[in-house]
Length: 180
Image (cartoon, rainbow, N blue to C red; front, side, top):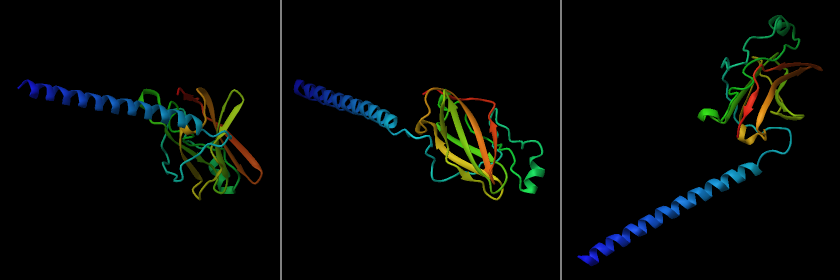
């Protein structure tokens, strides 16, 4: 009977040791991922976006305006460039309170124009790659904040539309807050 108790006790210790080893491996793996993510941030000003774009038209976010600039409907019919608008950024506080780090940006302007989203802070500018808007005048970017090379702090968000040498810019009323 004593041998049986010792055997059970030894098996419990083996299980505890195995669980402890698994715990250590999980922690080490987490540190590896965090360090690797810090080293893969782009060093250039252009932010990497996911290959697929998502259409989420009319998805209003706080501080963003889904209303076109004054007279933009009449200028669109003439082919003149209208000021960009839309959900420039779908989440102004990514990562806070458990929110997702995936972000969708939208630019609506005159069909045929090119648009980009820019982020500025302390003389540093990062941007989403230029996109030609579709026939409905929309462009979308699907990207992740933790892969964008945006440092901690508040970033100004702007949409810049260009067509036939003309440029129009709209600045979001709410800053993008990076806390991670």
